[in-house]
Image (cartoon, rainbow, N blue to C red; front, side, top):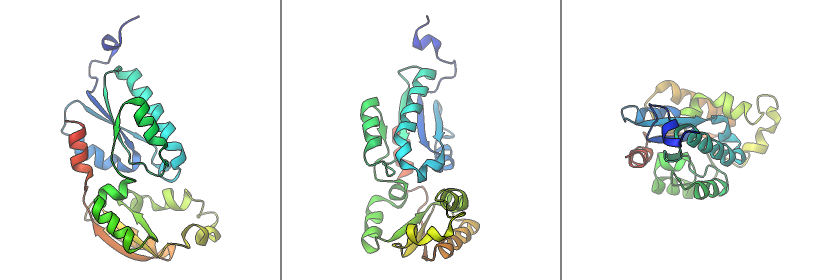
Amino acid sequence: MGNAAADQPASAPKVVVIGCGALARELLALTRDLPGVKVVCIDARLHMRPALIADAVAARITETRATYGPDVRVFVAYADCGTGGALDKVIEREGVERIAGAHCYEFYAGSAVFAEMQEQELGTFYLTDFLARQFDTIVMAGLGLDRHPELLPDYFGSYTRLVYLAQTDDPELTAKAEAAAARLGLAFERRWTGFGELTPTIRTAVA
């Protein structure tokens, strides 16, 4: 039986970033020019099924170490994302780190700005570029609203506005986000964030 180091692929990365598929474009853009960094993404549909995230991340960490050896560095590109602390138990058990914060909206907007927005209006539903692009698949179909539109008040009755946190200045995505707000019966607001705190977080994590 060979040892783990000898069994690693010749091109084994030094750092593997395990992230939400909703961040795939951003993570690839931030790491594309960094040698020895590999991005592995988990199904973005778990964005709407947070109870499944912790187990999915744990499985991917195990798979990563089995493939590249136990010494490969792993960084988890998820915030808590609605897991209620379950993801942090995986993080602690596996001895890795994750993005700080409650969810991607917080690190895109910036922690202070996001806290201010929440204080201004708790009934806010957020979209990112990914969610604006995949609104029908992730939100409408993910919640079953494409099949049962009568459930819309149950899901969104307590919301008053939709805030689109834009990573790019794309008029088409803005139009999609505004249309999503109209479909949900919410006031629309757009805030350009760029990659926000994701950029320094990833750059530091893979340094």
